[in-house]
Length: 138
Image (tube, rainbow, N blue to C red; front, side, top):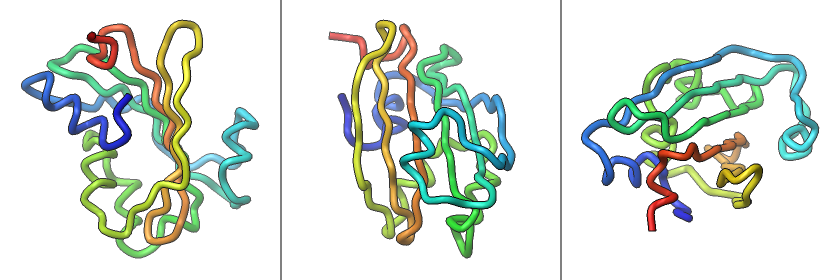
């Protein structure tokens, strides 16, 4: 399983990577609790849920949670990504580090969860790899 930018990896397997936004906006409560344990307490969190596609075929479900305190300065741009893959934003930042990455399987799907520090402020990314994703190729 790739440890770097999944967007970059997907770009090697298709002509065009696109993002279909599903949900974007501020939320007050994090569910499920396992995500809550990965982030500091905040009054609000930016939630972004998307489908990442390769040549219009759904390859990945992405869920990003960002404490409101992370969204300062240049990092406020996170709320305006819309159809831009998160990886394109994150992996061009020099102030990016990864605290952890958990890789596993559930119901036959590969999953990754990473907590990043962007300018020393956290965000959580959960990815579910759909059956057509190139990660399943041998």
